[in-house]
Structures are given as C-alpha cells and as structure tokens.
Amino acid sequence: MIHSADDFGRLIRQHRQAAGLTQDQLATRCGVTRRTIIDLEAGKSGTHLGKALMAAREVGLRLSAEPPPEHAAPAPRPDEDDPLATLPRF
Image 1 (cartoon, rainbow, N blue to C red):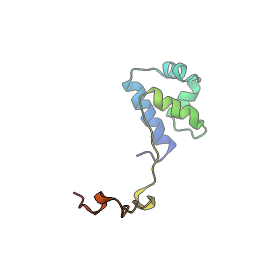
Image 2 (image 1 turned 120 degrees about the vertical axis):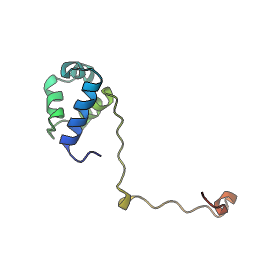
Image 3 (image 1 turned 45 degrees about the horizontal axis):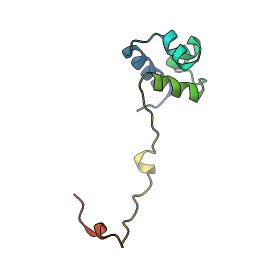
Image 4 (image 1 turned 90 degrees about the vertical axis):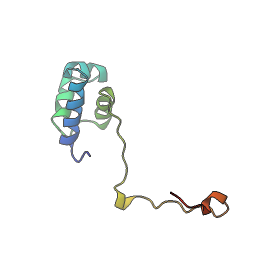
C-alpha cells in the first residue's frame, strides 16, 4: 500500500533497479530529465502526476485507486426478476 510520495518513490526505484534500468534510461523512456526521476525516487511531492504514472508504467507497475473498505459503495441489491438472484451463494 502506498501512503506517501516516499513510498511511491521507493517502489519506483525498486522496480527500476529490478528492470535493470538506470535513472537516465528510465528518464529517456519517459521523455523527462534524470532530475525528474531522481526527485520522484526521493519522494519529492512536486513531481507531476502524469510523469509519475508514466515512470510507473515504464518499470512495469500498474496502479489502481480504490476507496478503503469503510468507504466502499454498498453491493447492488439483486434484481428480484432475476431467477439467479434467489440461489444461495457459496
């Protein structure tokens, strides 16, 4: 779970290194400067979201955002006209 820019930066660094990429190589792939990658990996919060997401994609990360369980939308009620709605769920 990512809770901060520092967490995100560490994750990018770990995956960049695992992919065998240097900061320069990742920057070239993303169309940004090496300084942008350095700042991103250092957890500096000024990095643009689009650039951060591009770097994540380039090192093989897929990100998703979902609400915490206490804020999740309730499950839809089954349609009473649906014959499968009355079957028990296992």
